Image (cartoon, rainbow, N blue to C red; front, top):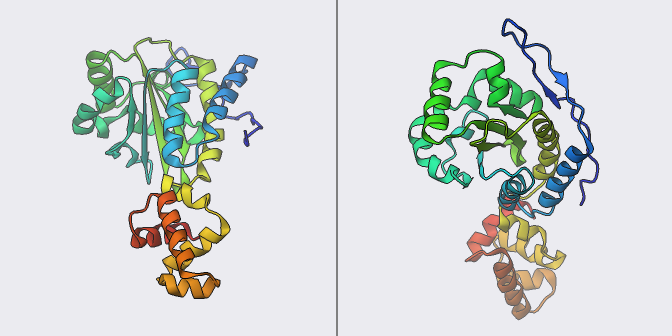
Length: 277
């Protein structure tokens, strides 16, 4: 595993509430050995993902396996505020069935889009419904989302979001839901906060698509051919430039198309340009 060092997050905290309902300063949660082992397990599960597409799938699988969460979603977007409008999120468990109503009616009222949740997600990487409720009343629209959509319709008593940084300044919110109200306690949330930082480190350097990941695995000679295809050269011109037989260039191009999944030279050219090979 390349990400072999876990750094304790300063945001591994929980918020307590005063008798009058005001949120006190966050208190550090002392993570136990089991918490760190769980974090390592998740990182090992996700570290080999060759692209962002694969990373999404492995993150969801890891949360399901190591946190026993069945209902998980992965939304991505260019900015925090449009991530809720992702039209093709990854959904597992009941989140697949929840998605149509969510997109049609509730996305703009998502509790994790409220100012309080945004502050938590930006500062610590995780926000939970329990923590938000401890800070005071939710906005009316978010309260309706929680009461009518999550609780009444889908019987989800636990809800939390994990913020991850993606390549190009984009970001993701991983939604975690469960019928049990105590599914994610303070130790689980502290571990997720640590994972928010470490998983973001892994993901930021990944190729966005599987095709881009395939380009990164080409040999140096294959990269040279792909670059020249991107420059608009014919097979004969590539052969002359690289001092190869034209038949060899044809075989290179055919092989590169197969490795990258491209259907034409034009598609390969566009892919090679996007990867700056």
